[in-house]
Image 1 (cartoon, rainbow, N blue to C red):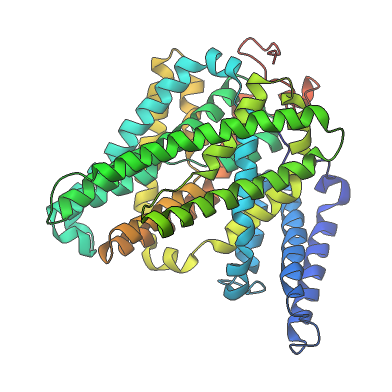
Image 2 (cartoon, helix red, strand yellow):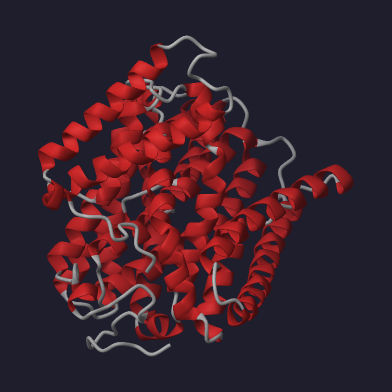
Length: 477
């Protein structure tokens, strides 16, 4: 996998005290810069570059400090974003945080391309039964479990939507659908950092990507049915469901075409493939946005291509149906570190601590129910697939993290259900904030305890190597 850690020296080599001192000095410089009057040191548009550079360096240092404490570097990246973001120290203000979110789309698409390049047919075939069982039980039990918990706790909930049984049932179903979502971006970062390889790692990654793909359709169906139940018209929005299905199919087809074109280019290009991948991520994102705007402006149809599906399909095609898979992974590896650092530090900046403060009791309740149903359904699926008890017990710890897709679905609820939907969005954002902080820690803990951390490095694995099969052998491309 494209390493989120790259070739950076460890904190132990540089010394923890030195890393802390450097982080403090950098923060002091930024604080001094903020005290200089506007026009002297703000440099107008240059401030955007200053903010990105500051956050990149601080997050990198915090990642090293986090690693020295036995925690994921990812946790350090997120912590840096929280600390220097608008809700704590305010070095990156709310205004600048909004402008800096422009990089998120590019980073998400790049990471989705990385995810697709890691989905190998051999692994999916070898671990297919376990992946399918865990996915199925997660989707059913998490969705139903969260929904049922919300419904039966209705009398205790101080929300507008809790006053009506119909609204309560719809709200529970929506909360359950978003709770099913995982975070492939976090999974990639943690697996890369831990240099993990083996059947457990392969299964976890396959489940994470598969569920985050299925959850888009699950959410669309839930929104459609829920909208019919709470509206006066009754009847399902079949056009909406058809558009969602069409969007998924067209996105995958276009992504596959991009993959074939990328492989053809890679065969002829001797250099700069890494740069081309960054540009390609940008083009995929902007093309999807342009199609969305054009469909709405010209035809009045909300047809949205999914850039994440497009990028995932492109990476999958290159890896499994061309001879350029290894080269693609090496190129991804070459530019992964700054993209991972900026993306996850910006995730920390964007975490809504205000929502968490306002709804922390109910958010923790949602997090707890999700954690219990996720762990239970993962263990059940692994056990039914014939995995051992240790595998089954630890699998649930890897699925707690939520990120971009979950936040996007949460915001969509607010748009689709004006008024009471905003309460659901705030509750979900608060819960996602907790999961984003806790999830990477439990993920790394599971990889360490199962014994697959460091196995890629121990066997001489490099980015682009095929992952190990269940018997420990190296699978061929």
